[in-house]
Image (cartoon, rainbow, N blue to C red; front, side, top):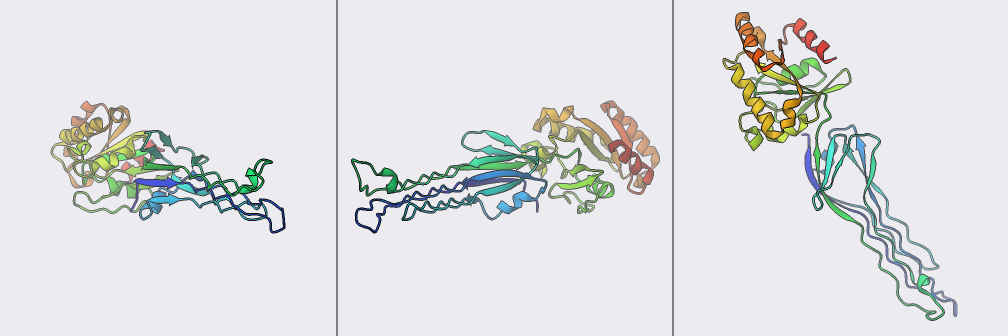
Length: 313
């Protein structure tokens, strides 16, 4: 299962306490050392799109505390730094401030929570006026932040369409994906990804009317096509209402984000091997009014598959 939306709490390490101690020799004075700094928490970026799965059972990330100071002015060891690897395409939102951080570069490394400073030991507080200070600082807490991490795939192409329009089968044919397929609605329960010539194709689970308001599965996955450069709109040639099928999907895209309607699109008339050629020609003519290129396609027609490959290459 792919985790693509999760809320976690991140806490940097608490600073270690300073030490109150005095030398063992007569008149040797204070020698308490300082506490170590708490561990920082960084975010870095990985190409592993399943990286958010690490948080499915662990919703609070806590960095190590700094160690307390010791005798003989020895400072405590600092807490170890934590590095959280998040998938490229993630948007990290601070739920308190609303500030967003978008992860679009594998070289990004960001300090998200700073560890607390260690407390000073009593050696640091000696003075001519107070030669035997009997106090030390406790150390400061590390920063805490609650964030929502939302994964938006950086795919080049997005397969969209009504349930059972042949999207997953086409993804499997074009790429190395092994998406589950079946002759019933909502076979695809999560976004499937495949790679073709270095470009990612995302198969978005079937949309239905009302998806933008949360009906069916669509609302959870529409976010994944916000960044694609080309929409591959699959319409089954088995349908007797191809214009209505087109408009249902298009309306849901516009409700979710008007920007989705500005994206380039190819209409793929799928499953052409199981309907008469005359019907396919009639459907293609009907769909021309939407001003997009129309490509009839069948998994059993290698020529049509190869034509699509070249358009995507």
